[in-house]
Image (cartoon, rainbow over all chains, first blue to last red; front, side, top):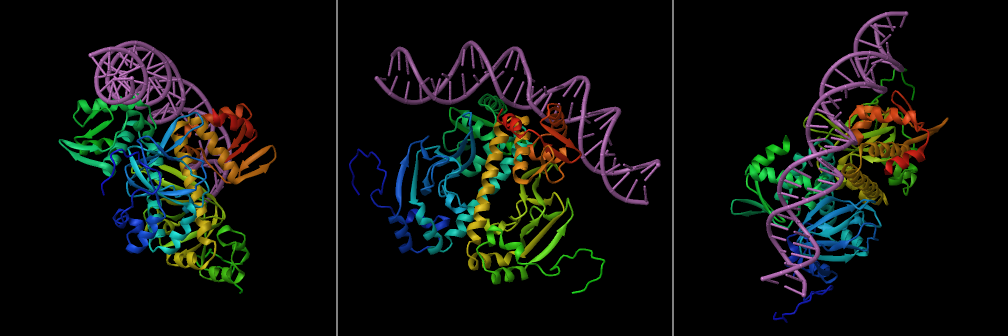
Length: 242
Length: 242
DNA sequence: GCGAAATATTGCTCTGGCGCAAACTTCGGG
DNA sequence: CCCGAAGTTTGCGCCAGAGCAATATTTCGC
């Protein structure tokens, strides 16, 4: 597979996608190789820069997506321009599945938090997938259920917890979803700014900064620009219950 | 079918349910009379007092429900005992459809806001309904989609709006869903306390009371115990945008 | 290596709305 | 009709955290 070095990544079907990309992912795990081949042949693949947009709130839901690599933030933008992050989606999950819940448009905007690779299919194929592929519907509805649960938790947190607890919780959740063990702790393995964190917890970047500074003095975390490492997860859990 | 007059309302199949109860409700609207008969014969019906519990958060999802009459509040209870209302469900909608999103337990508690009548079926019938009845799946996923949308809105509101705007929004939403035209305005047609409203908007009953008092002085609303009438909806909309 | 842009830190002030407390009103039951 | 419970109103003090502002640090393009 030798290729030229100048690889301006293309939008559509790259070299040729390997079946192994999908075989271990829940929505497809019960399928045969042959079926996965068919699915892949219908897919488009695309690379996004960090901070890129996969789809926009309100757009007609023409495609649905599978995040192969990277992280995606699902955000809503208020009339006054503030952003609120509703959800974080790690690699291996479907997104933009408006069709599954009977919507014609995307209910939120999906932005990449890191460089990411997504597959996508036209929404018209959705019904085929559901009908033809065993376990596809069940599994996608499970992730949907999971996301509903997360949103619920989010609502309860916003309604009842203090800022410090919310931020602690948010960091713990990110660590659980996407934590990477490193020297002296666990790190969130994608770049995240104070601003991002504040949009996730409904506060200001100033307050997040103050909290992190405080925690760092107490040895709970270490953080550089866009990087957060948790040194004492347990203490953070204690804080988050407060 | 003569019966004694002392009718401690029964839990199970009452006299005999009429097909017309379901024919005009979305999940069943595409079905034939014969099919609806079958569905009704499998249903249990039950009346709940205002403030009763239909099902509890965490319980195994053994049944799913159709609210025939009344209003239901879907609430979550925090470890510290505070209640947060996640959703209001008006008559004519399904609830407790954990199964649809691959859950084994109910994610929240459903309490009746008024005296209510619910039908219910064992969860084991869910798959049958989905498979046999045309439009059932589609329609239920639509309501699911709608609820996801509402939850999203709720998150954004909690994250960005002031208490006054949130309360105004909540009242407007209740008016839209369940408003009843009355002399001099529109009234929320079920009893709702300041406390309820505060759980819906993540504030305290005191603050809600103060706001309502203020609005009443300005002629926007009138409210007695457990009753709220909106006299000037437009002004409330203006407020809610803030 | 330099300048500009992005990101982060920190001090100070000000306020929305919570917590607490007390009184008042409405309702329903006996 | 009276009493107690449930619901509501209102005053007052306080503080978490937002807003504002100025400065420091890191990164990156040229």
